[in-house]
Amino acid sequence: MMTEHTAYLLLGTNLGNRSENLSKATAAIRMFLGRVESQSHIYETEPWGKPHQPNFYNQAIKVVTPCSPLETLHLMKQVEFLLGRDNSEKWAPRVIDIDILFFDELAIESPVLTVPHAHIAQRRFTLDPMSEIAPDLVHPVLNKTIKELADACTDTLAVQMVDVVYQF
Image (tube, one colour):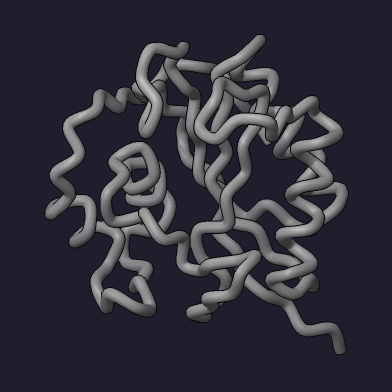
């Protein structure tokens, strides 16, 4: 029997047709990685780390996959490449960005992958969509739920749910 893992991913885009970019990324994730079990609404968010660029659309998704954490990372990079991601500049505007937020209850710190994602607790654009699909998920390093992290988050950048019709 094949082992299944649960991964929580954050999708982000601020170039082109943002809702279409999220839709294409979700379809590619379904094709390459596994079953999309749930997804948050889309949130429009101010850029974090590098201001003076277009606002992002962000969405959290829960995926059940047979892949390992490193296989998942590799496949996410492939999806980003296929959808036109340019990695030449950190925090630059992008067609798609896919981050692995959580993978099972694992804590991984390696040169290529850190899980849980290192900045979850400081980013409202991550915590708000995650609160929608997994408020009781416990961060395996901080030992707090997503809801507790969201309630304590001091990030003041605007994050607003978008009324976009989106189905998977």
